[in-house]
Length: 256
Image (cartoon, rainbow, N blue to C red):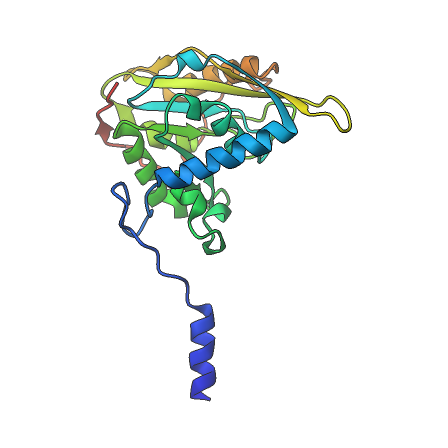
């Protein structure tokens, strides 16, 4: 009986996560790995070349270093590996991204976490508060952070921008926060032919300390739509605070 109980406990025990990377957050995130990012780029380049005929526009708009928040149109699961390998990795490596929490499952051996993924529980976002605080720290430590404002895949049309995570992460910057918009425009060309993919990166914009983050995001959603050859059909309306948000979010210093 005891041996059966021990065996059951052994089977359900989760693997221990290591936090020895320089940018790790003990108890929250194992940190990133340049080697794993290079592996993701290798996969994204090969897979992307086989499936897509890609054109990149606006890579010169991406700052080579420093704090930058990137807002991206989310159409399909290929957005991350192909968008990074064929796009942003051509400018810099220190790229982190908000991702769905299922990609942090132990069965993936922290691969997506070490690529710079930061999990978000979309169904119960209050459970992701520590992860979002880590995302804010990563951003204001001088890295690039990617957010999909729609928070889910919406193919061939614009979904509504959800401001909660954006509003929480940007906080109240003491200096203008650099923000880029990126559109992923997929154009199927028929059977046995590669889909045409145009990656368009907009000009650098700044969220100023006196601006309303929600109004700023609404303007950026229109920009993302334009970069993706779509229209954004939603009118601006103030959203309620998410459960993980604090009304008196503490100011953080932005490094440009």
